[in-house]
Image (tube, rainbow, N blue to C red):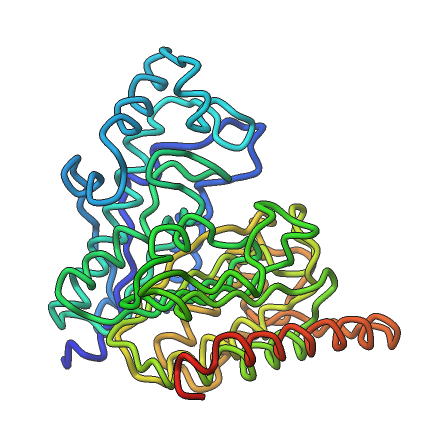
Length: 378
């Protein structure tokens, strides 16, 4: 078997031991359900598509980005010592609640992303997918948005420490403020985020004028999208604003966050995508032929998220139709509403919404082309 074509699914029973409080919309069980679905559909064949257990991130690895004081505060908070300083670090909020095993879970999730990056760097795999990863809001010394440890940053550092150029492409509906902050002054990581505008969604950042600073000026790219954005508009924004920059930057490795919370019906956001848009964008990214690390991220309609991640895995693994014999997908997913396989039904916006959205995306693309493209000779 050619290791360059091997696809690795990163998961272990350790990641199934922990869960956020029942009141939290973040469900750690999505990863195990995705694994179950892949197995039921023959998409983890154990030959070219293998499951590998990750290692647990060590304290030294975490300190590659996070401050010692913050890591101490996370551990202390889990033991019941939630100080005013820890609360100021974002701990103990509705978004980042205190729960048993929170530190260990974060370490396992981060370790899975680091494991994936190391496999790719060593040439032992071409695609690695950690559905338990994608905690892109965590800052060096602050938790936010269900995120305690920023595994995306830690994975990127695996590559940059070996002098590799990295593309971090974020398709999660929320702006990747933690990743952006980590690399805002660097040119060895090109950060591109497509997300619902901060005018209508947490964390309220990620506007077109946030383009990096110092040596990193021009290497942060934000593509904020209006509420109601649908498949065709989303794909067009990607093709016109992001694709030329990726081509010009020519990264050595790609990290892609595929949070499924941009799907229509997600309870925490307002975009109207189907997973067909994800599949098209992921296919375009895969066409670059670079080693690819995919991270889970958001997605608060669990059933839609699992179906979307299963489809994404199929596309990343190179399935030409990505729906080969998936007519029974709905049954295998135990979905009582949709028996059409992995792909969602198309969502067609009304004319007024389409005009409004197209006008806003046109303006966004124009600003990015004006502000960022010149840094890349475009």
